[in-house]
Structures are given as C-alpha cells and as structure tokens.
Amino acid sequence: MAALSLSRKKNASRNAAVERKNLITVCRFSVKTLIDRSCFETIDDSAPEFLNFASILEQILSHRLKGQLTWFGYESPRSFWDYIRVACTKVSHSCICSIENMENVSSSRAKGRAWIRVALMEKRLSEYITAALRDYKTTRRFYDDGAIVLGEEANMLAGMLLGLNAIDFSFCLKGEGLDGSYPAVIDYTPYLKFTQSSDSISSDEEELRTLGSSGSESSTPENIGPPFAMDENSWYNKCKRVEQKYRLALEQKGYLEELVRLREVQLSDSVTQNKLLLQRIKDTELNHKLEKEQLEYIIVELQDQLKSYHRFGHLSADASLSQISFDPGHSQDGNGKHDSSRLSGGKEETPSLLGLCGSLTSVASYKSLASLKSSECLASPTTEMTSPGLTPS
Image (cartoon, rainbow, N blue to C red; front, side):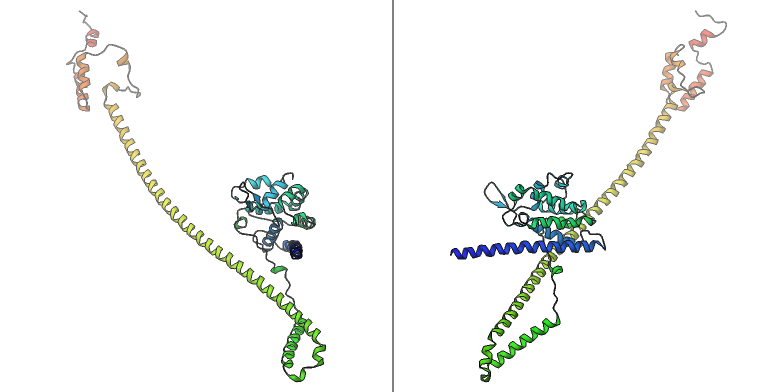
C-alpha cells in the first residue's frame, strides 16, 4: 500500500514537471510567433498569436494558484490579478492603480487581462514579472508547491518576455477580450508538426502488410516451425511500434475533437450573444423613434404657444397704446412728452369741468369738450382773472 502511494506521488510529480515544461515551451513558441508577426503588421486584439499568448501567460500565472479562505473555512477561487496587484506595488509608475479603478472592468480575471495588455503597450511586462518574482514571500503565500513561478522556470519566463519590448502593441480596453466569464483556452495546433516522410509511410505500410501476412500465414500448418520462433521478438517490437503510433494518433484525434467541441461551445455562445445584441439594437431603435416623435410633438406645441404669445403681446400693446392715446389725463405736447405742467403747476380747473372730462371715454366726446372750451360758453376762473378790464371782486 505504501509502495502504491509512493508511486502515485512520483507520477503526480512527474506529470506536474511535464506540465510546467510544456507551458514554458509553448510560451517560448508563442513569443517567437508574436515577434515574427510584428514584422509585417501591428499586433492588436484580433491577432490569433496574441490571443494564444495571453491565454498561455494566464495559464502560467494561474498554475497551482491557491484559493482564498473565507470566514466559513471554504476555499473560493482566486485570479492571478490578486497576486500581481499585491506583488507589484513597489514598481515605480505602475499601472496597477489605474487598472484597479477602471469602471468598465469589474471582475478580477478581466482586470488581469487588462493588465497584460497595458503592460505590453508600456513595454514593461518583463519588468512587472521580475518585480513580482523577487517578492518571494508574497509569491509563496499565493502559490502551492510545484507552481511555475516558484521553480526554475520562472527565471526563464522573465527572460523570454523581455523580447516583447521590441513590439508595438495596440489594444482596446473595452473589447470582448476583457470578458472574465470565458476561460483561457490554449490552441496547441500552430505548434504541432504533422510531418511524415514517405519512408515512414512505406515502413508503416510494410509493417502492417507484414503483420497481416504473418497472421494469414500462421494459420497454415506448413509455416509453423523454427523460423517463426526465431523472429518472435522482432514481430513483438513491430507490434509495439504500431501500437504506440496508434495511441499517438488516437490522442491527437481526441485533442482535435476536444478543440472542435470548445469551438462549437464558443460559437453557440457567440450566436446567443449576437441574438441578444440584435434584440437590444431593435429595442434601442424603437425607443429612439418614440423619443423622436415625442420631441417633434413637443416642438410643434412650443411653436404654437410661441405664436399665440406673440399675437397676444401685439394685442396687449395695441390696447395699452389706445388707452394712453384716449386718456385725457395723459395728453402730450408737441415733442411727445407728457404735459405735467397742467397737473403740477398752475391752478386746477373747476370741479364741474373735471367731472365732465372724467366722464368722457371716446374721441367724439373729447372733441366736443374742446369745442365747448373754444366757444367761451363756459368761463373758467383763470380767464376771468386774466381778462382786461375785469377786476376780481
């Protein structure tokens, strides 16, 4: 039992070592493909080489990352951004605070992906990784034993990322690449070589033909003898080689089927999101149409109210002017000014004349008053006082 557990531990450690080596190797290949692609065009979010590199780097930084213990003792998953945010606080003029305060990025995984893009645009990704790895205490607190960032591969990672400083990146921090709901999927297809020479094909066919002929000949009694016994080891080795090649082809087939399945899932999710976006666009257009109609109706009402206001203003102005022109108490002199001297200076007219003037409300009555004053039918105290030959009694 102890030997079985020991063998399991050895197998687990060997698998972890193979996983670390494969991730570092694939990361080196992705950096090389990025450098080759940058010679012809600018690298942005649409480049498949960058998307693969970002997925590989995310897998490396998330390798054997510890979870966060809650108050109830449960372990919740954690993103590599939690480690970068703490380990890179001592980096001068870092982008950590700006990414932490981004409004359109909410999840921790999305902030980590935004940090990768900003660090590449700043040409400081290797500097951030080196500063984080130097803080060994924080790294040890966030990762379990066997993690890539705790092994010798970490120094290789910081060194190979240094070559990315020669590339000019251009990213949009509001695109779909920052969606934290999708996991990072690595595409190993560009790094696999499916080369098979004609010699190997002929040898495989020869081996299969030989195996088939040996099986048919072995059923005949005349071929049973010492020659078959002498070549038993060679036949066994050939069978082993064919079986090994079959298993390798079967594993590649399984990988490709899994890759196709992931692509189908992503395609179905994209179709669903596309339908939702189209429905949202239709709703937005309908709302905009309704708002436009309401605004047009409001504009027509305001124009009608403005016309009625101008019409009412003209009528009120005409009424006020006519009232002023017909009011005898507001008579004007030749210069258009009110004759206030009659009201303030001199003697007042008789009460009977004032009453008569106050009762007149039309132009005709006003003219009749003027005719009465001119015909001397009515004598005022002022005329009697100023007439020659008359003395006041």
